[in-house]
Image (cartoon, rainbow, N blue to C red; front, side, top):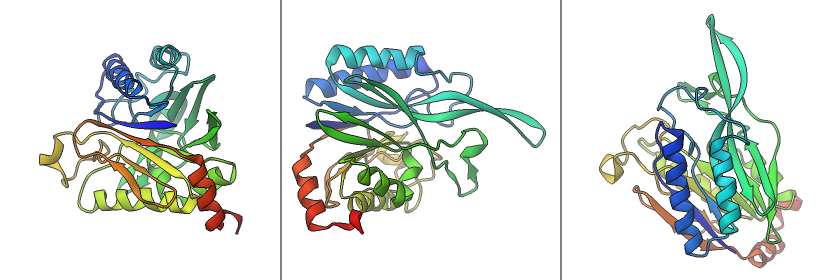
Length: 269
């Protein structure tokens, strides 16, 4: 099964972002990809305005547009979006929180995974505006079980092990990873480490770096460092993008996962 990680830069307008996503999915499908993974925040980039004003449910125009495309091309699409969640009061101000959701649509699926681990670190509090999820999500595509995570989840190996123990052989990670000193090195290490922890393929699709390679390594906020990665169950990076918009591909072989898990039965310990 061929899988693609799409690296693009989304913006503030949900309709334009849908067009960007559709164009990229068509390109990936044309190259034979069966599963196409787009970044976190595909419907609206972080740092581009209030997320609640464009948040939609899974039957809204953004998710429906991708659902129809998945049906047309006979592919499975994974894409980050935001859905209405709840209202909280913080410092006397009412905040309409959203769910940070990875839409999975195609091959009979149309579901959402809500990011469990919100990015509450380094003086940033995602949970102020995003309600954490609680449930693991996996889907089956052509006999291969695909688990779903989002961005900061990648720092929590237990989630990856739990998905693998539940049968996931591939774990996808829509991401909008902040740039800055050491952040790219951390990103590469974490993707390979989670592949090793779960003895699974990990497909991590990040937002392209705004400003490209020229801005690489500088503080960026949660708007992407690029370098989308597909890692094998041995932790080896099979494909890696640069800073700019790009699509990377890899062939998924479930037999390699089974052999690796037999040789290294850490999920049974």
